[in-house]
Image (tube, rainbow over all chains, first blue to last red; front, side, top):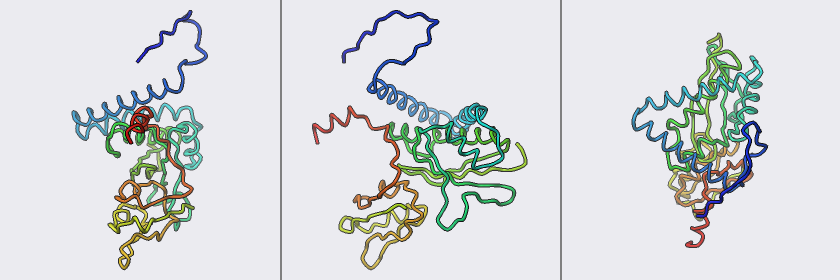
Length: 182
Length: 83
């Protein structure tokens, strides 16, 4: 493979207006990153066993709290989820889901509110499929932590996310919110 | 609503999709030994049934197809020459 040498003048104080490269470069970089992440995840699981989930969860939660700081605070679950969707962007496209016989998206019971979320596009799933790793492993806990961190930050409550079902095209998760503060 | 087509000629009636679906979208017609769709309304298009079906007898119409960023176009190009 021939590597092109790109030469030009560069001043450190200038903010580059573009990253350079074309779609093939991005694709290659993305695939290398996916392979790195997959290897890290499997090595983490090999070394730490089930503790790997907790480590990745914590990393995701921290990211979620940081992202949550950019969002508007609210007590409304549906509004919070919409805000989170905006921040998470197209790479984690999710929507609320309910079985056909259920009236609303949210279910209230014992001071808790739960809502089912269907994740259609997910970078984590892409990375797992790229590296041939099974779903529901440590890497899935990154998104788990991210959602919990973000919802905790936006709503100032305690939350948890359970994985109900995993699939190649979408994953169903239940977000449970415990009212009454952290 | 999602529309699911079952290729009756391809379906071997193994019941894998019935067992795998979390929302009971399918049932096994024991008389004919084929899968039948009984609850399309609850299909969330996770496509677990596609992955588990040994004869690729299922087809979903009008669903959100997740991005396939994991596909390596270079590998595909190389494979195209062989297949």
